[in-house]
Length: 274
Length: 183
Image 1 (spheres, rainbow over the protein chains, first blue to last red):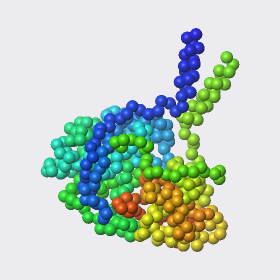
Image 2 (image 1 turned 180 degrees about the horizontal axis):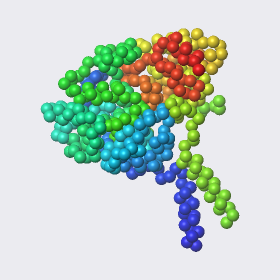
Image 3 (image 1 turned 90 degrees about the vertical axis):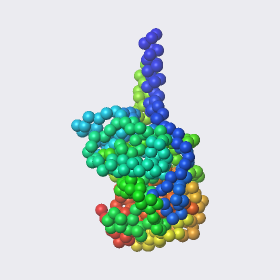
Image 4 (image 1 turned 30 degrees about the vertical axis):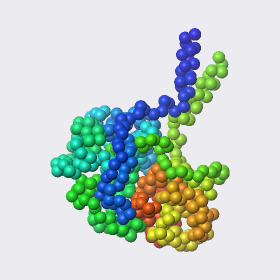
């Protein structure tokens, strides 16, 4: 009787489609609404952009987190991912000699891999505005720029070589929002990293012509002294979604009142057979 | 008890379907790995891979664009005019909206009529905002909503080969045609 019962139990459990789906909810924290000052506001954009309340991961996604994801979702195993979604460096460090710690932030992940991970957690990547809004904070103030040592510390980190060993999350004090590691650990993907428009001249890239962009107008930097923001803007503008390089990871975000992952209503119809 | 084995096999087959991804027929860099759905100007649903089999020209536009998008559309119409009958039969044009909130199927249909677009071969698509963003990243194109219904965006077109690989990106007619006619 016992054998037959456990057989039936195994059969029922084994038939459950897709496995037991998503991981436990990640470490999201509520971020209150506020404003941030975009470095390169467009012609029609306010100098202080409002950011609605949302939720953000308190720390970057870790090696352990991402490993769980890859084990649960086969198509994101290294070697399985099409070149459209990640370059050859995707998770390359997992096959290398480096001794990895579970609480190090994950790196060598492309935009699409990061996006897929967040979707797996019923979350999304933060927008650049959301990231910069939280990233502007120091340990004591929402405007870290008020602290003269703040920018200096960030720039000192930017000056370190990429080959320096990656620290673990939460090694430093959190900022005033309670969020860890917005600076000093890794660069991070944002959902709209490709919304950064930089003209060719300033970077000596003659293939990127001003005429390629409509509506660009005259983009002036809001605060030329915020060199750290310049660095991040320049970095984002250099990224391609497939890039799975060293030193680049991510964290997830969520709407304050999460509904469906993507927005915009859409009229639907049935497709006739082609 | 005889029926238990077929039942177990059936369950295994079900698990196998659910757990393993379908091996994609597309090469690694093909855009057709994107499986998001899009709605056209007739409210019919599509995946990008529906257009596999011939050259596909993709442009990211929005109907309220008054600057570069009209130029892009004229560019595409001129390109069309240079194709042979055989090339025309195989080539399709996709105009994908950066502004899905405003550019509903009805708006896209009206826009197509106003511009006299050949809807036998041209399709206008509306997607979810997150899917438009993902497509733009896959195409290495940039765009940004700059407020008041305006978008800053790159204006080059993308030419895909029959299996969804990018053959050309840019704004040069001659180069587009060369790529389209190339191997």
